[in-house]
Amino acid sequence: MDERRTEERAAELARSFLGWAGQLPAGVWAAPGRLNLIGEHTDYNDGFVLPFGIDRSAFVAARPRDDGRLKLWSRQLGQSEVALADVAPHALEGWVSYVAGAIWAAREAGARVSGLDLLLDSDVPLGAGLSSSAAIICATLLATADLFGLAGDRVTLAQLARRAEVEIAGVPVGVMDQIASMCAERDRALLLDCRSMSVTPIPFELEPAGLGVLVIDTRAPHQLAAGQYAARRAACQRAATALGEAALRDVTSEALEAARGTLDAEAFRRARHVVHEDARVLAAVSALRARDFAALGKLVSASHASLRDDFEVSVPQLDVAAEAAERAGALGARLVGGGFGGSVLALLPSERVPDAEREVTSAFAQRGFDAPVCFTAAPSRGARRLL
Ligand code: GLA
Image 1 (cartoon, rainbow, N blue to C red):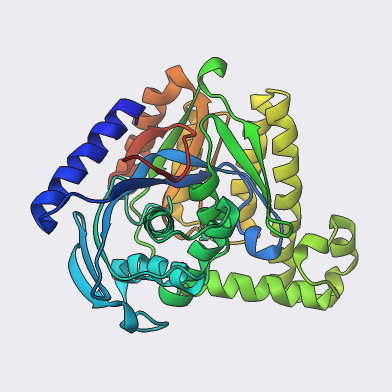
Image 2 (image 1 turned 90 degrees about the vertical axis):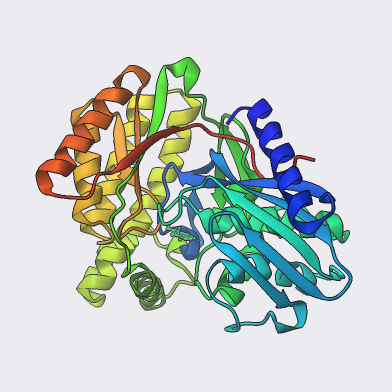
């Protein structure tokens, strides 16, 4: 979304807030969803990821209250009211746990929150693997930090946002999504070292290269995702421990091959994905710096194959979408996020975007899958105050 439309949207949200709360908001904030160019299931292995913020965001209009209550209205998800004192691990569910969790995390870090009226609107598709929850949390956290004077750099805020998701919403995620939403920059992907937490913006300029990123939201139901995510984490930890290392980040490809006989077959395959994926992220950074998009595309597709065959987090809809995009001329295509549903990212020459949409839609129809939703995305700015 361009800056002018974003500002219009913020002003419109402020007007709705006035109608709802009877006063203007103290401010309006936004935080984007994310796509991950490459580096999947590496963040909780202390490894490398290369995500970027997209041009779809969660917007939050907020105003302090002084009665210790949170009055929440999500345009997409409904209304709710909760006392600050009742926000605790395992106490809340659904979207309210994300919003209230963000405010809880700000309090944990020392913000003296007295209560909030908060109106939320988002155009990050839900359940598409684009971190709509991280966007909501990051926008709410930044609003709370600004309104109640919580200092902290973006990485610290992203780590707090992760605590909200893990401790209050109860989802055992890594830190990639929150870093992407908090720290994203226009025309940049972010190389994040998940051990040192250093963030390096890498130029990712699509337009001058004549390229586009197509998001294919497969709409595949992903009920299995939470349990399988925890199982993958456990297998990775099992492999690292068996290899005598703190995390798979410390394991080389040679050491892994040498230890093949000592690991169970499943742990070996999971570890092989992670070790090679870390190397692919660093190779992708070199490709981006050299503007070698053909090489980048190959790495992206290799990541998908590894997620499908070694990490086993793909589903037929994701495979069919990636293959159809490649048939239509994509330089590379892969599932993004945790897997078991969600979206495929395809990197392709801009003029091929309509062909890819057609190819994917017809492949889905042939297989009897629900129709996918396709849209293009551009690397965009991270969380910020708009009004
Ligand atoms: C989800 C999690 C991230 C990351 C990805 C897999 O999106 O929220 O922390 O682990 O899965 O790369």
